[in-house]
Image (cartoon, rainbow, N blue to C red; front, side):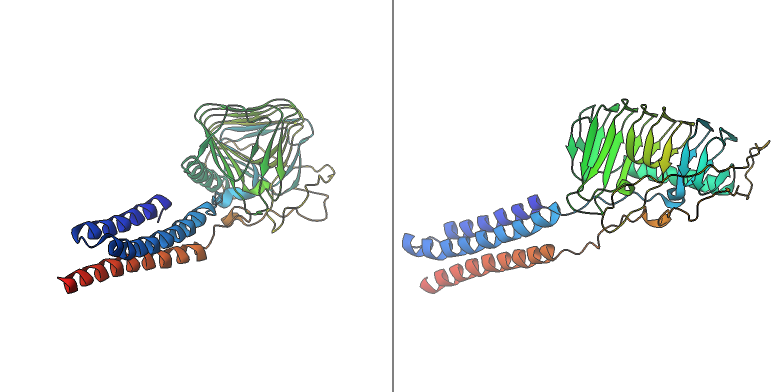
Length: 358
């Protein structure tokens, strides 16, 4: 029940008391005593009810976006994947229905596999579409300025009907909640200026940040970005851009240039982000001559001693929805029931007194 609905019920109860007073006129001192007490009881209980329901609504959190099988992918594209320079990818690389992946090596994939035009890549693309539509449909949302630079945002859904830019830094404040979720709905393009950054503080984690982009995303040189980018078309990372998150393009290309992309994990308490050095590895890649799916994956040779954990595909890397039970909501229902009972008793007592005197 919403706060406005609860308030409406309270007004109705008070109106009933006033109508009963008008229908059965008694001496002024008597009426004021009887109805005044009933109105006070109803008003007090209604205040408790509104406070309980209102507080319950305030703590309702935005739930995470379920990426499904796409959650293990650092890079996923629809048409082509092109790399220039010594990019480093931690996580799977996928392509469907396109077949062209160029620039591996010198790209280094520190963990994960390459899924090119196979069933795994197809499933990941389908799950990306589902996640994209989920993020795009979230409500309620807050409309934000076209440039997020210099702003600090708390958990929630933020929207721009056209393009969204980032010049400088935007700070995402988790308010001490490791499960805090941030969703950005962008009507057309996402563009960051050189040196821009997404800063996570007070519990905010990259695994719970989602950027739904209506067309294409372009990250400027040396941008330090956080969160999963879900684009309808393409994504371009200019020289030195880094992403603590994922680049998932539904239909278009992903272009990298000395980029660093790391699939994030969620923890109970947000950990300080660190960058680990990796040694070069060679990925055997043979371009397929057909667009029909295959069931094979390309294993990646790596010199690292352990695989970077990639989290749980089914829960969006640790983000979980609440159980839905709220003690404040229960208190609200009890208080509302007492308010109804008090109003009914006041009216019944009033009518009984009037009938007795009649």
